[in-house]
Image 1 (cartoon, one colour):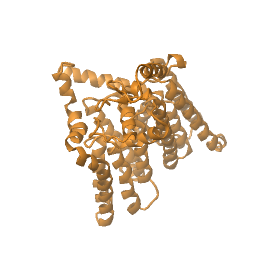
Image 2 (cartoon, helix red, strand yellow):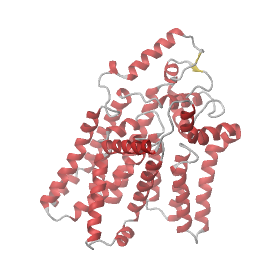
Image 3 (tube, one colour):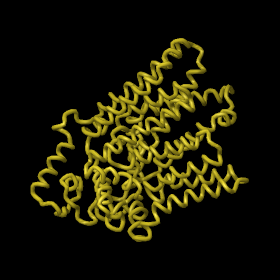
Image 4 (cartoon, helix red, strand yellow):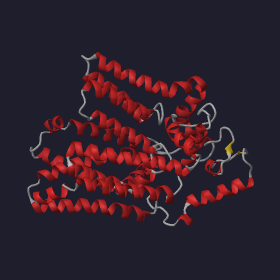
Length: 438
């Protein structure tokens, strides 16, 4: 068995590039053939307006912090207004995410961990869809993986603790001033202060990095348009449910409605993340059985695996946030898949290394491979975001292109378009009416 594994893992480099190529090809398929997500309107519109010199909050409405719009504005400025350019930008970050997941899993658990984590990542078509849309999702995942790469790296604490503050602060700069990640940043700074209580310099530098990065991202907009900024990024997001009720779109949700919504969301989560969920639950039951029988001391185990503990804390806290959030969606879990894939890969690799029975090891390998291979077929069969259209003529991208051509044919260059679907005007090379990006 060891000879088979040794021969198999000698090909790790080829397996990495094979996984990488498959992931890239799947990404390209989704870039050109997947469904159009309505939210892409906002991010395409906002990034294109910024590329033309306009300022969010002052010149147009945006309910997120502005960093993602500025990142995506660069390729829009260089290559012109295009939904495909925005999606290709997301594809670039998706591929970087794969490299970081593989690298972290390899570092924490060896080759087997990297293969399992990589397999879980490239087989999830639901996540690939959201990673290739023009939105904030893939960028914030990339920055969180950079955060964990730095935090779990081999640098001195005096270097990595302050350095890790930067990527997590940038994630805050993408979403909201008050959000899960902003709370996570506060917890991380408290952890840094606790671990470095005698090293005031490390604490001071960490606080300074957080303050400077968040200040550079948000302060200019607070100065230029304070009321608009706080309404858009704070008040609007908390008041949206009441707006729906006030305008008669929905009725106030009761307890039964909230429970039904929660169960529906959880059902969707298991449908789209069943492979990684099954592995994590299996590992949990395995650990409980070892603790109950006295074969494992939980405190000693945690002390020996502090890096995994950090990742598990993140997963648990984020899942609690998703369960508690009134407007929670299945797609919110996209944010944590990279980390959960790493934990699943590392945990399984260690269990497999401890198994002495060759037939049991082979059976486990077979189950894992089968689970990973089954995932894309099961998701595709559901017919949701995980199913791209396989012919260009029937894609929503083709429809958008046709409508944009008609808009261009019935208007003149320089005309401003009033629309709640900015993608048609932008693809037609026409300007938007002020304030109508969303």
